[in-house]
Image (cartoon, rainbow, N blue to C red; front, side, top):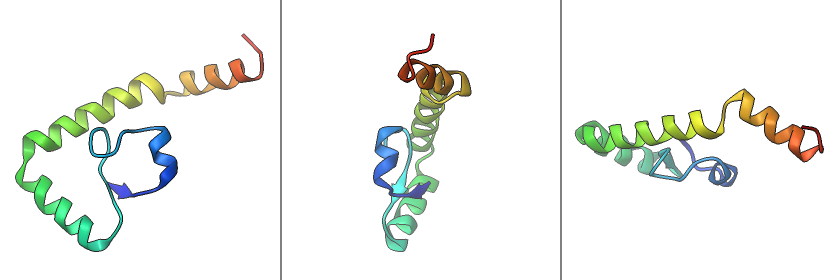
Length: 72
């Protein structure tokens, strides 16, 4: 879980690939929910893992940076 930051939306889908919160109360509610819902927790964990492996490796980041600089 992480604090809700607008920049995260560029990298992950909220509450599908990563769980975010805006307040202590929301954090406590989400902790309670996910502790009691293993299947929902696992679904988000798996989706976040797959997204990270697909889009957020060093190889992908360098590939994207080089492409933006016009380098192959």
